[in-house]
Image (cartoon, rainbow, N blue to C red; front, side, top):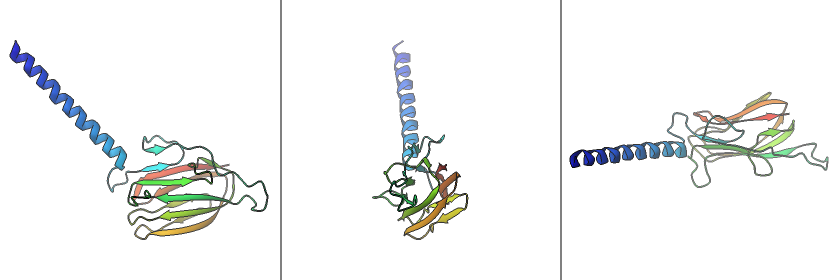
Length: 166
């Protein structure tokens, strides 16, 4: 009887180790965004991916009328300390991820310090992107019409986000 109790405990220990290893692999994959086959994270509108950061509406229009609704958005790939990190973001003037914007003219300040990522913005009448192999700091002036917009890292399509213009 003692022999089977020892085997049972050993079997439970091995199963627990396998479960812990599987959990660690899943956490590592989610945290790192996977490999160069398109894994990644985005700060944008909520999506089915557990790797995507949810967002709130942002980028309010100016009340002064001087800018005729011109607003600034901040776009980036990578992380400040890790340019090759599998993250992509589009933030409003309030620093929050963009989910919904009013139609109008926007300045999009893009920070692309990565040599394996790019930032590609598409939607009705808009198709702007940075280079995959070059690092860039660029500002685009875009007119956002009502509709759905997407931003993505072309070599890593799971690094993506969407927002709506109303």
